[in-house]
Image (cartoon, rainbow, N blue to C red; front, side, top):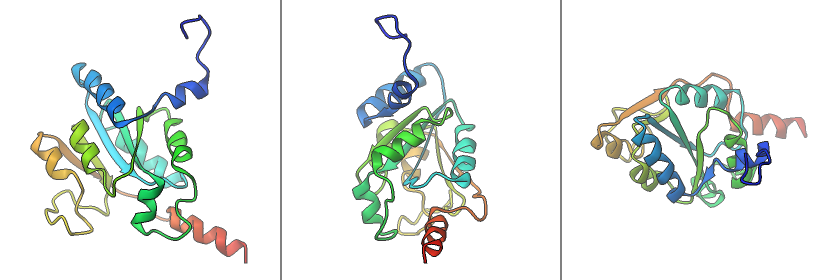
Length: 181
């Protein structure tokens, strides 16, 4: 209920889950005080597909408060995925993620990696796809999980989740382009 006695609208509830880094820290602090396990993952999440839902739901199951870091538009461009990426702007991508009931908070980050955000919120569990390696120590390796050292230093865990085969944003983008020819 709002202070005026009216019911919060669904879109207001969804938008309230999109937080700044400082707001995320406050929320995480409250949930940690309640002895809840904080889970963090990150990505571009350009076109949400079956593989994303599978991955995000499994990541959410690893704790109580699930934070998703989303690359800003500028950050996605610097990743060099393709000239057309991101296909959707950062606010749209954040809104779609926030609409998932199992996502507690979404925070957009502008850096190339979520390292500073991970250091700030100190998740109990850091999650990435199984194309990464939780034991990789070489920061230059494509299998290295950014922030894993910081999470381990705080006695947190690193988890990887197997992707569903046949689902990728790049694959969907290629299929759309092929259908237009």
